[in-house]
Image (cartoon, rainbow, N blue to C red; front, side):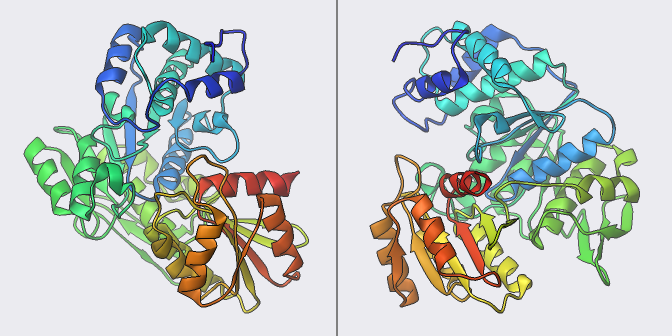
Length: 424
């Protein structure tokens, strides 16, 4: 395919980007660093990295909301997107337009000099150029995979969060928690604050922080959180304490842990003005995150969650328990071939009454027939095979009534198209 020009549309560019690299994932920093050296983008005042297996999107959204309370210009970069590529690059909470992205793509291409950048690497560089053009004060970058060799890590951070570590992307990061954690620890920097947001920090992260001299904040040692009576919660850090906080708007009890880690990072950055009850309640009380325990109400009740690994599926299962649904739950599920079918499906078995398998809208999707066979073996229930996502949505709707719940899960490549179908 011929290289698009600056006058071409965003979709033309995105289609072309998929052809640049022989591998969809090719971890390493050399290519990105070389192109960055040619581009020489101005560095924003503050750069924050957010890594981890799950909870990255929520943590980015919370950090973004807090910094917006300071009237700072905030740029965020996340992946993957749910519906449109533009969702990956936001300025002050709003996705940037096609023209800005195309202009940045054109600048990256002019500096690439034939290097085979991956889709993610090209997009990361474009985001940095957009943040420079918009003169952002704070840039929050979500690490795509791992940390040490991820393209985002070519941008020097001032601080960061590792939300948690669980098994995912094992073909690239390692087959055990400590190996994966060592890759995520690659974002740590000497003398700079980083937060690990889960209860037990892997020894490889603790050891890396000690070796580098990074300021590692740990849950249970440097900060804590706890639900209070009613619908409030409390947080305490190394120096500051907040009580009677309103629950975050994002659904799921796991969001308290994400919020606690975000507040710990803000405190470690000496931004005490952000540790304010009213400000935190405003920032966390208006959050929305597409495809994460997202409720959509039509003539049916829908719950959409991209849970695509075992840890995320366990969180989703806990959320279903908290909902206390007495009616039936019908689940539409699609997955990618490299995901753990048993790990994702097992935490949901006690909640789901009927299953509908669909092939996700991705080249490396697990065929619906294989997915259905796996679900049937695990659940001892028949699993319907849908020929398309619209067919699966119609089938789930026909099997339910207004009191029931339809769950859509398993992959961004299922939840995104489902949201588009529901909004059509």
